[in-house]
Each structure stands twice: as C-alpha cells, then as structure tokens.
Length: 314
Image (cartoon, rainbow, N blue to C red; front, side):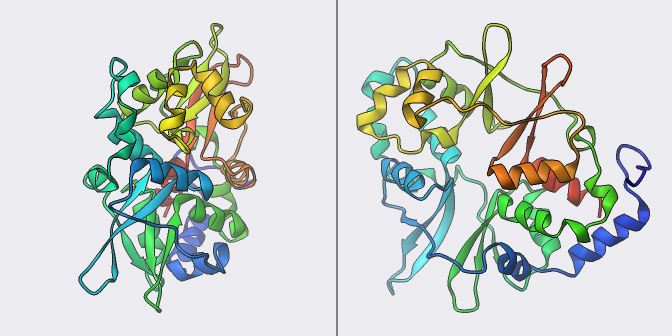
C-alpha cells in the first residue's frame, strides 16, 4: 500500500497518473465503457403530471427524467431534468401535515411547475473532456447530464455512471488515491436523523426541508440504524396510494418494498476502492458510515463525496 503524505494529499507520482488519466479521456470513453448500447431515452413532456412521473420512475427503475416541450416543427426541446427529489420538494410546497388528507390531487400538477426548482440542466458532447464532466459532478454538484450524440440523439449520464467508469479503470488511477480512507473522503457528520415512530409524510417533509441532504437515516429508540428513506421511496406514489403517507415510516417502506431492507454501511477501515466497489456492486447511492466498535452513526458517503475526492486530487 502506498503511504499517504497526509490526510489530504496522495503520492505525487500517483497524482500525476490520475491527472494524466483524466486529461486523456473524454465523455465518449465513459459512454463506451458503461453504456456501450443506449436504450431509448426515457422522457416526458412538460404537460405530464407528477403522478405520471412517479409511475415512470418506478417502471424503469430510474431516479430522474428529462422533460421536454415541442417546438413549432414538432421537435423535442429538453428544458430540464426532473428527479424524484425535485418532485418531492415541489410537493412539499403544496402539502403540509395539516392538509395531507385533502391534497392528493396535488399529484395532478404538471411537470412544468417543477421548472426552476431543479438543478441547472447541463448538456455535453461525447467529445468533451472527462475533466469537464468530473467538474460538473463534483464541485458544481450536478447529479446528471444529457450527452448529445453525433446523430442528434441524447443519452442521460449520471454520477453513478462515472463511478462505474472509475471503478472499471481503477488499475489506471494510481494506488494511493484508491487507498484513501473514509476520513479522507468525508469529514462532516450526520445533519439529521429520523425516529422510526414518525409517519412517512413527516419523513418526506423533513427531507424536503433540507437542501443539504438527500436521505435520512431511520433510528430506533436505542439510536441504532434500522433503515433509510429518500425521495426514491416516493416512486410509484399515486392518488390511490396517497393514504400510505400517513403510515409509520417503517410500515410505509414495507408496503412499498415488501420488506425493510437494512441500510448499507461502511466503517473507518474502508478504502476509496472498497467504497466504489460497494456502490457499483450493490447499486446503492450512499453508504452510512458507522463506528465499528460503538455502532455509532458517524456520517454518510454519497456519490458526490467520491467524485469530489477524485476532483480534489488532480
């Protein structure tokens, strides 16, 4: 294992290796590696409803959808990319715990109402450098971009896709970057937690009210981690299922998923390489950082954290 110079620096030779790797690749290389065959882009017109978007997200097992309007020539013009979290935040502006029972028709709002609440839509070309994509996914905290192909078609590329690319090329990144510890990747702790007795509606509204988090850990009365909830768990929500939001959060998750899945965790001994592998193999969007001795919840590792680590070392 390469010895780290300190908690924030990697071996200078490996730093040069990483820099050269990033500079010598482009967006097309990422697509060729992780999406060699592109399925037709899943999208929706801006006139579609929130309910239709939630159904489509679940049907295709995705977290975001490009939204378009049609120009006078009948061509699609993409105006934004709406995620499950964006839809949750939009709902939270129209629904409160007091109005929950009477506001199920809020799901009929058009997606055009979400425009302006989403992150700025980014469009890249296959020929754009990998450094530009990494910059968007790390420092600018963009979660997904549209890639314009030579034949005027589009492919959606996400943070997870770039993680998969780095993981598949890990032998070319330099060993000391891969040996970085959890402490080198994440320094901040947990901002908010959720008691298992609260309702799903309370959980989602709490999540929507904090722009710095994308998921909440669910703790029991002993402060042990028993679950997690994110906007992903709203997929499939429709007017017929609206009343499930009043259930305790654990019951809501069991109703939605059939069982309560244990959250995926890591501890101080994990390296960046191991964390990337866990993300890719387990198809997760976060790892909860636990103290191996005490069982204390110390933090959460996100896709942005991993990509920001790479960006900060080139």
